[in-house]
Image (cartoon, rainbow over all chains, first blue to last red; front, side):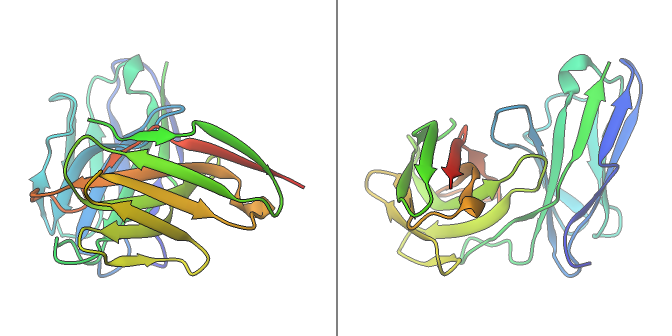
Length: 117
Length: 113
């Protein structure tokens, strides 16, 4: 697609429920990133995929968070047993050229706003 | 560790200039600048790489002092559309996770007519 698409744009759930957030990156972009943004803060890195594999998941806060990218395109961020502290905007980004020999520009989606009651 | 941005907020009238600074305590490979409007995606403005390469929009200029690990974004002849929150994101030198950015806390820019 023309941009990074994220669904749903808004999700309200109850504490303890399971949530899935979807990201559809720009066609042809091999790298995909998930970031989390709390109110009034900058985005915080969660996980990075190169192709189908998670190259770096060091930002996932705990084992309730998991992400997949089975075919190297669409990715799903999964959150189990949601807690109120998980409330935030979850941003997805993709990039065409993920290597340190040049400029690696990330294109962000508009995000999925998660509210845990 | 999060880079530090200054100022936290700035208010301008149309046509005025502003400088936003970003400072890191870590050795950097690159600095990225984004602008985000409320409820929208962060939009890429500029990337500055160690060694001097830059890429970004024509009307945006920025600098990267590799020795001090500091970057500045220069906004000249501001327009109403420049309003938003500006974030710098830093990529550490020697890392292997490409695109793993650490963002500052943001600078809120408001441009009035």
